Image 1 (cartoon, helix red, strand yellow):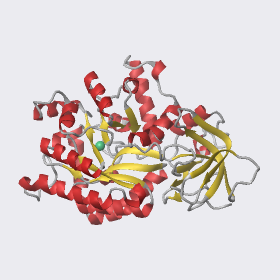
Image 2 (cartoon, rainbow, N blue to C red):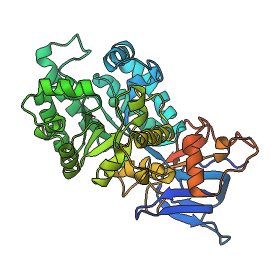
Image 3 (tube, protein in one colour):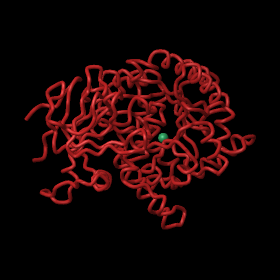
Image 4 (cartoon, protein in one colour):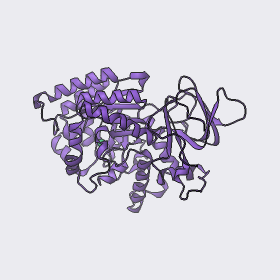
Length: 446
Ligand SMILES: [Zn+2]
């Protein structure tokens, strides 16, 4: 059997399924996708006998899709994914999360980060927006591992000058030290490899940051033209605490607004309990939201009124939020999101007419995520001129019985990938036409 291509240029014959920039769908049962030597897509359409410019690797019956985009993950937390269900947020953090983050020094990151990037790629994720720990050395090691692996990554050192697991540093120096370390990391990594690696200034959330840290980190992000990421309105207890800590702010979002944190390069995770005015302000600011429904269910944080947000024009992509989300798979996140919306229908907080269909969820996990990062012109769909961030999926892993044929209808196929996703179904992943380590390769079924 022909080996999978490792580097561009190459041409793949496969089923093609992708959202399109114009809102449409690319759905070709017998398709041809060509990637040029520069790692960009030069053709995405029907296979024809007329010879393409290069030898064709026949992947049928595999499906080629855009790589998935994870807008929110915590690298140090991966080892404890799936542990602690039923605990409240603070107990869970103390028992399962802060010990891992505290221990995430350079040597741990050098061992774990390469495995983490392989795990994301094996799940079909080709772009990851990640929080490291508060230590600059391990953040640097996570970047170095992403550089070597080939995945597209936006990473930031976590910043906290309140409620921190850093007991060694003088509290009077935390702010200045954290700003300086973040500034240095951004100078070293932001924009590396033609923009494949980017920096996100990462104040954890309002509960663990002073107004000064929020403001200064936003200033640095603007100066580097880098991202600014934090958590917003995940949990009712957290919202109460933010009110107590920032009595002058109109609401939770206003804390970040006053810090100058909102804008087109801002990614806010969760945002599930927003008031109407917060929704309006968030949309007007051009900020994006990382919707993490698997995490929200795991920690019983709440259910996002997604249809209301989308109707208001909010830019929403998907995030695994490992380890509050139990798995890195964005297909699993789509399933959790769909289940959440069905439950909201039962409680009359959502309407069936607004429900996202399986193909809408595929779009949310790819092109919408790319757009949330301002990368919609470069990745997120199989379109000529875009960088070839692709995955090859074997839909035979999702059939209920071994000898069943996968559906030909695109909506039904997407439904199977989401509701019957299998850990081995992603067989290959590429970023800019370069194969990523992680997925097992094409052979396995049949
Ligand atoms: Zn998170």
